[in-house]
Length: 370
Image (cartoon, rainbow, N blue to C red; front, side):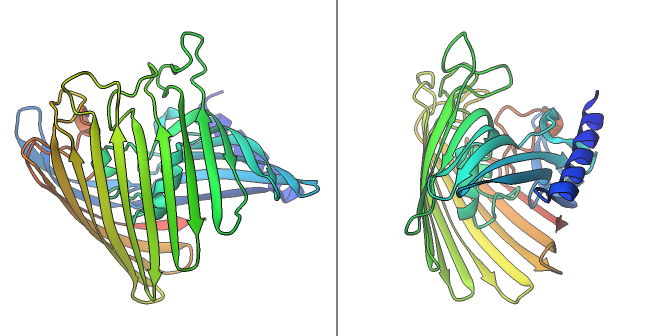
């Protein structure tokens, strides 16, 4: 049975369950639009610009269904199955049937929730709420080459109840390999873990995260692909404005000698709810890498600054238009893209400029949520 047939069968079962038990909900969002980017480096040492039809610039398109069953005494069982979609060619993200979430668990009103399966890595699950651009294509993932929007398999997670505005989330992802406790299967991360403490109130929110993301060999040897992270973020709501800022420190203790092994990352932005339908957001992002050399997969010492301006116009609670424009300025050795592009990306996957070159980009589109 191929993936398309499997998905059709699962959706049919979900629709039947939702009708029969009212315990399964189908959900998702569809995002598509037009994108422009300049100064994309070519293999011959030049640069080009591109116009393209793209999906997922404001937020990845996705399809999922989740459900729960009341077990009595304040306890319930639950599940969530969710996959990313590429709407321009009709495929699922990463070649997985459920690329983003696939877990089952138990929830108790007094003691919290525990679950097991595949999920967003803990920083991806926690950073977006403090990103002025909620992890759009030009946003907090860009200057860390996607380090903060990964997913991990073999997770065990715990979510505490909210007590006095505080809650805790912990995540532990097993490598599941007999060859080494920290190692992972081909194409997967190694053993990874993290803990997140949050405080929410009507006026402000604060969140701290500590996590470790290991590569397939169980090592933390690249600040943007396998490293240790300390994150602190805050939101402040004042009248029609929401102000958001964050600081992240990344370190990779297993990095080969002489290469960059740490980085500091900052951002500050604000959203203005101009009207009931129109919101305008602006933000600046800055990354600084420690001293050291670089190679094909490790960035050298340097820094980059990215400025982003965007807006959304809501036709309804579920449908809106968006537009975003951004500019990144690199130091002499840096080649960060506006997108969260890996340093060693090639072919159509590469959007990095030449070292020391700036880059400008923009996108417009429509998002529908269901």
